[in-house]
Image (cartoon, rainbow, N blue to C red; front, top):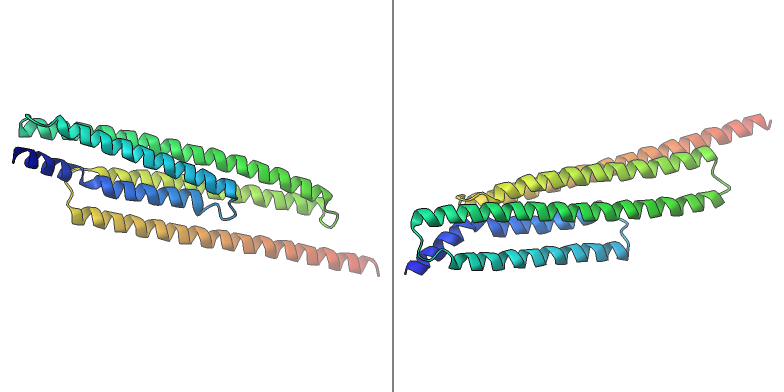
Length: 227
């Protein structure tokens, strides 16, 4: 009976863990997939590797929780409460640090992928005899701006996810409260993704329209000069 009470206390205290890890999985998929629309198979491999690292970390924490449970036997209610609070705080800090490391790894990979793409495009543009040097410069500037916009979006969403996980990990909240937090966070992420997608589409259209208008103006200027 005493052991059952201990288990019940631990389950209650760690109630936010499942929701927190569910949110972490969502963040990994979004931060490594949503902004990498043209990701290569190598990119897919990177996401798979990060997902595996996340799973390994999750299993390690579950093992630590199981071992921690054994240390509560014989403690008073006050001692258990204090021990659980300290353990939860330690796990939350470890998870936050771990997720920051994963975010940094993906950011490094995306930066390398971007540089490789720019290098490839420069080589192709060098062989292009149709585009002017001005057009080529504008095209490369557009690529750099896209990368910067996506990176800023990824970093902002990551910070939001870290704040959300802190809320999920707080002890004492009911199952209904945590579910409400999860739904609110999911809705917020979905809205942010839709906004980012529209922003990229609008910027892309504006760039294409500008390039077409400039090309048309140059063609008309050339035609008028030849008369």
